[in-house]
Length: 84
Image 1 (tube, rainbow, N blue to C red):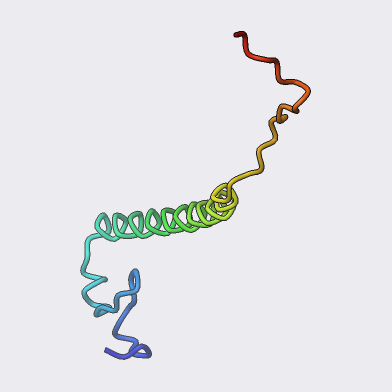
Image 2: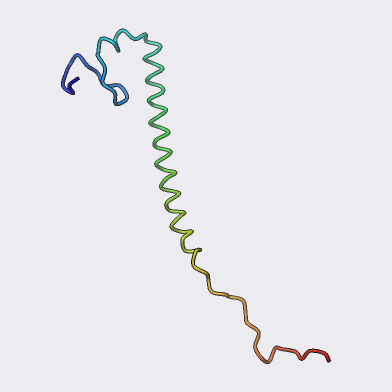
C-alpha cells in the first residue's frame, strides 16, 4: 500500500482500501469517527496530566532534601534545674 495511492484511505493512522471504507455502513463509519475523536481527546488529557505530574515531581523533589529545623532551640539560660 502506497501513501500516494488514490485507491487507499488512511483512517486513524491505518491505510486501507478506499473501496472497503466506502462499503462500510454509515453507522459504522460514524462509530469509527467518534472513537477516533475520543482517542484524540484522551491523548490530549493524558499529555496535560503527564505535564502536571512532571511539574509536581519536580516540586516534590525539593522535599527529598531535609528542610532546616525552624523550631527555636532552647538556650542554656532556658534550662531549669531538675528537682533533686
